[in-house]
Length: 369
Image 1 (cartoon, rainbow, N blue to C red):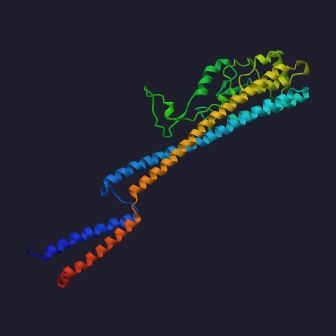
Image 2: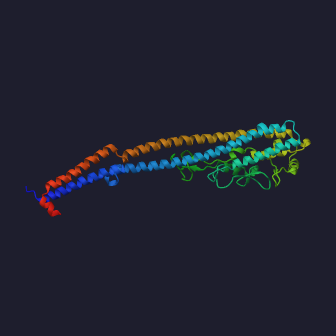
Image 3: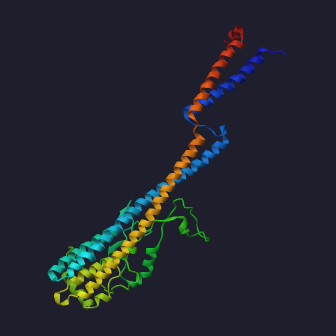
């Protein structure tokens, strides 16, 4: 077989090209610290890496969502805790002290304190987190609680709470849900309209759960205004209250929420000694204790949800570590092996260049110049 110069050149060029490509591939692995830089280099590994990356990013989104919801739950928990402490202070200290051998002047001091605590309760119920009212159920864009300008009664989303006519709507507001997807396998029911509660996390919480007695018919009192425009006790308000609520009737016609009950108790305390209704005040303190227990139960419920979120975040953090490890195994080469292979390929490339010099005659090389 005749070996021509052109054949040697073609073979040499082919082998040199392969050697150069091999060197460049190993060099890229070392520089980029990746097993491949394009899908065509390793389609199977690239597909696996793409799938792992999607899972990793989705898990990261779920984890960030869960952490944000945890912060919102913390805000809810802080607010309800304040309500619990205020309710405890009302029935355990201030309320009892106001009934123990006091006169009108002393009771007026306690009434002022109760009204101040009432206003603090409303502030706690309107607490915000990230410009969202955390005690507003599924509607966090507007402050949920306020005192009605005309009646002085508590309102929730504009509805007077101490009004039996609003019971059904308030119940709907209290029980509404706001579901968030945190990787529990979000699913809809057969109709495709409602989310299956076990597949998402409900972040909605209404302050009504802590301070509203939906079994009570309410006080039936038309006016609970107790403060003047200067935020001082209105002396005429006590007389108006006694005109609407005779002695002995207060214990059977108590407001159905913590805020209005504070107003009603303050009005009872402001009565003259002859019109002071001790039994009604005592019954209201008992109901205040009930609201304290109700708020405390709500606090426990939030704690259960918070604990669930903490465990979910812990699970997602473990999943993140697992996915990152798997992704690293697929994408990242063993650097010791990669550097060794690169060194060998560099050696082979240099050897190929030297062999080329020996294979081709000097005259031919001169001709190539």
